[in-house]
Image 1 (cartoon, rainbow, N blue to C red):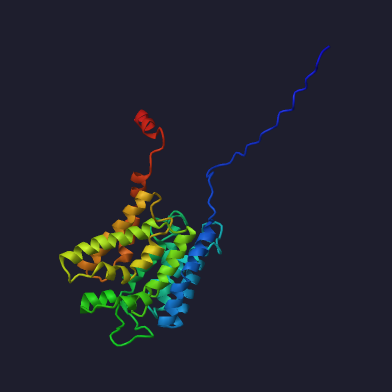
Image 2 (cartoon, one colour):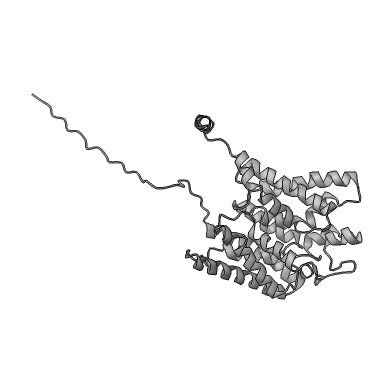
Length: 329
């Protein structure tokens, strides 16, 4: 008597062979860009409330020329035209919010063209630029239109004692100290997106909560401002206090929306701390010892240049990489 056994057919296993990356995020480029645009809504509203509806025209002009420039360059380079991914629109809106109220529309358009053309597309487009494009456009306008870009407007709800000068300029040149409450609300002179600290914080905290902004960069900048600003204030009480440094000018706007740009900021946690602390140190030096009352733009652009170096020396070694390098030498 024999027993027959039948082997069960083996189940076939299929593997998908694809190129990297193999880990994917829930955030697409377009989703991130439009979320940041949405987060700027409180600052946009504050600018219109405190300085008038003309500021909306400035923003529309900046966005339109940024998107148009990107489409034109992509067409010339025979690349896919990304009308709706939100990156060019974000660059234009960020640029507009760094401009003074009632700024020239023609100069705004030029700034957007420079921001996209020289700040982004000349490096190869999104993801390849070294410097924050909006700040590149702002730096160009600072050099090309120095009078217009430092001409400030008194806010609509100004009371006695509130001038058109920014709080930093009023303190540096006229020794007039602006109340923190006025800077928190936005009832002070300054660039469109920087005057209301409350509006900036609402948008910035929203981005941190949803996971787009890494909290380490803004926190390191705030800690750096407290430490470095506190040291100079302790040495000479005539210098601004750390609290004034934080609420005055575009410090919070830069910390939440400019320094946290994914492309131009470090990719490691340790690098983010170094990046934020470096920005604050340079900013304090510019504000106290420089000829200009403000320096957020320059400090961020300066540290942007060091991001590749920071990434190189803060990225953990891949297992076996050191041994392999020694073998190849």
